[in-house]
Every structure is written in structure tokens, then in C-alpha cells.
Image 1: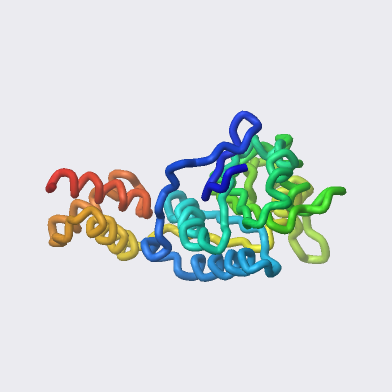
Image 2: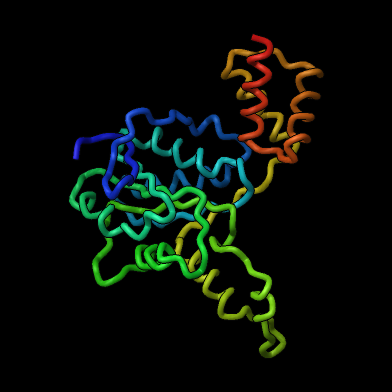
Length: 251
């Protein structure tokens, strides 16, 4: 396998990604606590020290995917590599990691937007990968997964009916316990909250500057807020989209 910075698992093969997104950690604002924890875990990993699988959950567009891509750019010189997996490709995990096991590089298996039904075969494959089956898991492979769902699986209305009281304490039912147990298999669990208005505006200004549009006035701020209101979301993704539109109009 030729050395590349990133690969994707496609048609049961590792295919190199020739043009990797160049996201920088300094460009990710409003998530300092999450960045610090994830940088530390990744640093331990590339230095061949114990490190954890990571689950990043929370609001859409708040930087969960971007921070994983930024880590690749930050730690690639130390041997970090990224392998992008679709959720349903998890059933191929033994085949994915087989050619990686004996390599010197450190591989993060990146699963974006993880959400499956409770009976999905990918769920069993992920549990095995996280907790280990009979085969010893490779020391140079970790899983970093992102999800908009806190427990990775849809929350059904019937789950609430399974809660019961034991000695004045409320305990979840079997379905909920199964969902919680899956997310708890990740050693590092980071939550991403919706942006405040000021955080959103800070990210807008960052993206405008990167697009060589340094002008910031009352009109720009008003239109940025209106853009977020129309999207019913204040997030890094929405901020970037507004910046591209506004900078393009005023180029």
C-alpha cells in the first residue's frame, strides 16, 4: 500500500484520497475544550502511548467533522493517517484493518454521522471493534466517530416506557441500556453545543478574512444574523456558507 495521508474504504478496498481538505485547528473557534482533549488524545496515539477511541456528538455544523480533518493536517508529520469509512462499511472492519496492522503509521478510522437501527449488522461490528473480539485489535488503529445522536441510535417512544423504579431510583430499560452501553465503549466522549450569537459572528468574520473580504460593518453583521435566522441555525457550517455568499457578492 503506497503511503498517502488519507484513504477511503470503497468497494471493499482501501482507495487513496489524492486531495485532502486542508482544515487548520486554529480556524476552529468556539470549541477550545473539545480541541484540547482531542489534540491530547491524538498526541498520545502518535507517540505510541495509550489512547482512546473517540465519539463526538452534538449539534450539526459545530465542527465535529472539521476537527478530525484538522487533526490529520496537524499530526500527519508524526505519522497520523485517516481512513474514511461509511457507517455500513463497519461490517468490513476486519478486512479494513488487516493491511494496516503491521504498518508504522498510526491510523484513525473516521466514521462520520454515525446512526443506525438497533438491529443493524454495523452495530455488532462496531461493538466488536471497540471492545475486542477473539482477535487482538491492532495497536496502531483508533476509531473516531461523529454523530448528531447522543447514543448513536434513534430514540424510540417505547424506550421511555421501559424505565422503572428501584429503591427510589429511576433505571432505564434494556433498549436504552443497550444504546448507552454502545456510546460508553468509546473512551473519550466529547459533546458539541450550538453556537452562541457571538461565536457565530466570530466564525463569520474568520471565514470572510480567509476569503480576503476584511470589511466588517453593521450591514454585514445584520445580514449574517439574518442568514442564520433563515437557516434556523447558528453553526460553523452556516457561517462559512454566509461568508462565501457575501464575499462572492462583494468581490
